View 1 (cartoon, rainbow, N blue to C red):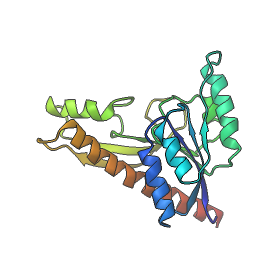
View 2: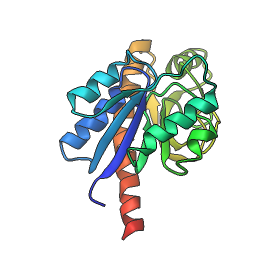
View 3: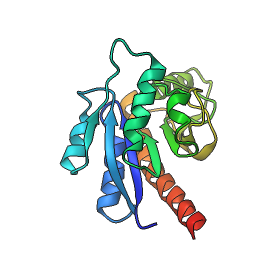
Length: 201
C-alpha cells in the first residue's frame, strides 16, 4: 500500500483534520485525505479542506429523512471515495448500522475523555468540573473503533492521560487536550496504516 486513503467526517472547526493534513504535507503520514464531509455547511473544517486541495462535501440531513435513510446516503457517498479508514474528527452525529455496517473495522473516532468517562458532548468541561469537585485527578483522550451505535464506546486503539493542573482555566485545559488529540490521532492513523501494510504483505 503506497498511501492509505482517508475520508474525514467533521461537524465543526476541524483542528484535528488540520493535524492530519499537516502530517501528510510534511511526509509524516503516508496517507491522502480523499474527502472531508461535514453535516454542517458552515463548518470551518470545510475551508481547511479546500485550502489543502481536498474535496469538501456538505451532506446535510433533509427534514424528511430519518437517521437510517441519511446514513445510507452518507455511506454511499463515502464509499465512492474508496477509503481505507474513515476518521470521525469532531463528527457530532450518532451513526447507525446503516452506515457502520458498510465499513466494519474501518471507522475510528477521537473522543476527549478516557474510556468509560464523559461520553457525549462537553467532555472536557465535564472533566474540568469533576476535577474541581474532587472526583477525578486527571482526564485524557482516546481513539477507538466504532462498531455500533454506542456513544463513545468501542474497542480502544490508543488512549492517553492528560493532566489537569490546579491553576488551569477551562480554556487552558481545552488547549492542552486538543494538542494531545492532534498528536494521538496522527499517531493512531500511522499505526493503523502500518497494520494494513503488514496484512497486505
